[in-house]
Image 1 (tube, rainbow, N blue to C red):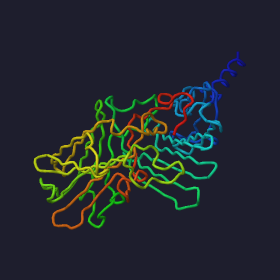
Image 2 (image 1 turned 90 degrees about the horizontal axis):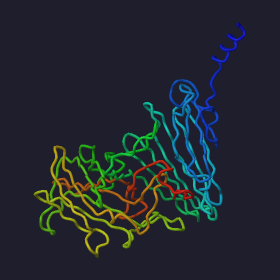
Image 3 (image 1 turned 45 degrees about the vertical axis):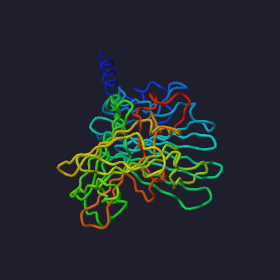
Image 4 (image 1 turned 135 degrees about the horizontal axis):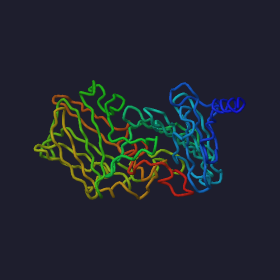
Amino acid sequence: MHCALAFAIVLAAAPVSLEEAVHDERVACAQPPADLDGDGRPDLGCVTRRGDDEPQHVVVVLASSPETLALDVPLLGCPRCGGALGLSVEVDAVPGMLNVRERGGSREEWTRGISLAYRSGTFHVVGESYAVIDRATTAEVEMGTAYEKGNARSHRILRPADGGETSTADWLDLYVDPDGGPSPAHGAFSPPHLVETVVDRADYVIEGDSSWSNPDDLSFVVRVRSSGPQLRFGIDVKDDDVQLSSVSQKGRVGDGVELWWDRGGDPWTSGFAPKLEPDPRTTVGVLIELLPGGKTRTTRLFPRNGAQPALSASWKRTPSGYSVDIRAERRLFEGPSNRSDPGGNGALVNAAVIVRDVDAGEAQETALATAKIERRGAPFEMGWLHLGRWLPAGQNRRAGQRPR
């Protein structure tokens, strides 16, 4: 009797192994483990697989709930998605964050990384990275996005093969919010979902930086919605002095919004040279000027010749400035070279929004943009417009298809 009681007490006191909650094959786990949820105890973070053609999962078991999976989402490619090099994965953890990387390719070796942070009972994607290197020439492109304070801040670095000058680009991503609303959370996982892009920093002033003093002087918010076959751009501008253009095209030019996009796929050539000039086959730039009575005038900036894009615009005054509503056919932003969103579905389009401010009595106008643009229409310097909804890999990528 006493022996049985003692044996039962030992069993009750024995610690539960976190690995026991993981039933799929473990490919890699973070070593050493780290405290992911802030309770002072190390947690388990791993990559698992179920089959050669199924996406690999990122799983987490918290020490506070050792018998269940706190996270189990298909974020990575399938084991056969790695090309000639095969697919390899790495996992590491630091307090509050789990970092996962996958690598594959053939002549071009690619690496994709995802950083997950535990906040308010849910794992959030807080950062992504993507790099591709030509193994024959050592030319390389490196990209990364940090999701912070409601914005997605991204950068791109291109290192040419010939040892030439490195090219860089920085921007704020634009996202199309689909008709169905935000991507749903998957259990304890929340994919990045940004309904607006806020531009209110001095480092995104591309003209007239001496005239810009603070966000009350000039700042703006962009929201892009999908409405059937149309995209709707809502641009709310904070401007302390709204200036209108003359009805006559030869008269005064006032405040306005420029919209630039390029449908030519990767903003670098096959030889890893940055595309720094607009291409009349794929690049479009328009200026929308504010006219009296809520009317607008649309001028094609690039290419100068050709039909006017199928878009319409209107504007209205607001307590802090003005708001512009642009409606455009979605087809204008698609093809001929659709570029896949790494880790997401839908296409990536190179795009930028520029707000021009002309204050009365000042000779120099100020321009604030979603990207740090030096050359109007340069695809490499534009940011990304994400046309599709961000979803875990298992729901947006065909078996055997690697991210681009």
